[in-house]
Image (cartoon, rainbow, N blue to C red):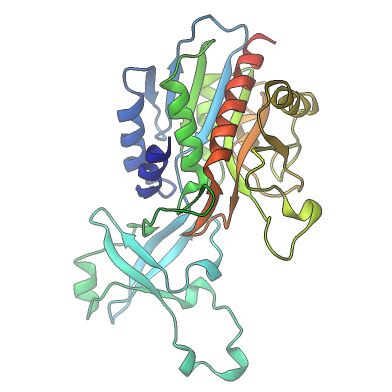
Length: 339
């Protein structure tokens, strides 16, 4: 799946602008399943297994990434913007971006250190104080290249390094999309429904719609989550660890997970010799928050790829954790289908 992840991460797709990602995913699953695109832009795919399932199982991952959107241009030609999703100002200062369908290059600008008052040197500016420089000399020239409403994405830069690590923007959640594509292209034991959801980063909006349509009994959310296995953190504050397999959640800020499903996921991992771990901190949220409240309620579990520096242009994870997560998700889906 590595080349597929590399391609997926290189695509531009902030919340509400997932077209490039959707087009690529369709090109990879066409002929392996039946699918439809709903009014929000979710891809809902129906994969036939070797056997009919007793329970309907939905597997979900989101297509969108965090980014920005153009709000205007000032008189000197500098582009103003708003965040789309949760992006910490610290991670994008001085970084390169691409804007709009023509992927116009730009860079986040900030007042140079030489001009900052001594007492404000350690103050991180708000995004309202920043701008994007696209090399335009006037407002008129800038507006010939970009327009309000254009999407802004971190520039693509996929790196393989160290002992099986990869680094890129948008690993959240293109890793999950790659896992689902790979499962759809493989032979499954039981029928299964897959949702490539939109707009997760701004409130799990797509999954609310796709779960209502799919009407599953059980769901598996395929995600990434914070790996704080870095200097200065220890014990449960590490959340999860790169290299120890997919992280299974017992609770986050949007879902209290079914305890039987949480324990069953770890039990299946032990039975099948699949690396897995517990997400040790109640933090974040994902599409499970919308899915478990759909219709009359859905039993849901989340398996996440441990990822350092989430929501940044340099997310880092271990490829082997993506593989381990895939194997656990496949085994979980088979168990749910017949339980």
